[in-house]
Length: 368
Image (spheres, rainbow, N blue to C red):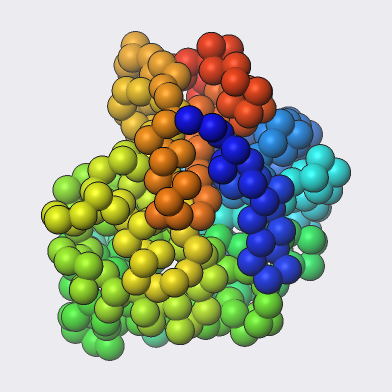
């Protein structure tokens, strides 16, 4: 199976990518104080130099007091952090690659004691109080408006420093997904109840981002059925429901959907081999990014945040190439394989699969 399809250029409006290989966003926690440093610059530069067409950065927190949930993750607000990201942008562009930040708010996942202000609880669609302590603050309309404004400002800043677009993180049980998911959204106002109502927060947020960046600036939206809290969770059960869910997001301004699955080869619905990216492309006509255990065997990314001696070995991509050749999706996001091996794309292109590095927990301990 020829790998040529993976290295064809892709164009959407003014966005031109040299290859179909995308670096998936992966939290790394190597930005003390939230500021990307020289090691972060080099980390992204190396992937662009080796043939990654589009880099989606690790999750970067927007300028809201409860957006962060983890130590040393980068932020996308403040002059110091934006200056650090500008260095990343310039380094990636110098290698011929393109880059977008993943804009992120963790929502109710946040815990008391986390930086930058340890006194701030999680913020979410539904509150949580335990033993008289507010662990999750139920967001008011003002909170919602402020959070949406923070995303819009981050997108505006991304455009100002030369990023090639933005990705909005609407997946994996973080804030936007907490509004989507009936398991975490128990509201009785216009943001709760039906899936259409639970989508209102995301729709308003996307519209605000679109207004901030103008009509031609690429907006990628990442979504998932599964949550880090529940791998079996599903927002929708049928293609018809998926279409009803996606249509308002398209209308709000999404250009590309990043369809997060744990294993790209698994069919999304019975009766069809199409995965989530395939169905999304078919239903919306928009370009899609597939992702999920590309290039590696073994368990998925989240397992490696626990103590494990498992090693994910390199795996063939013939099945992926078959799907890409029949245009099931447009772009392919690679996660762990690129995290451990910055030259993954180049090795694939040159037929050097035997030189690709395996992935283990140790890879998370440094930036290479």
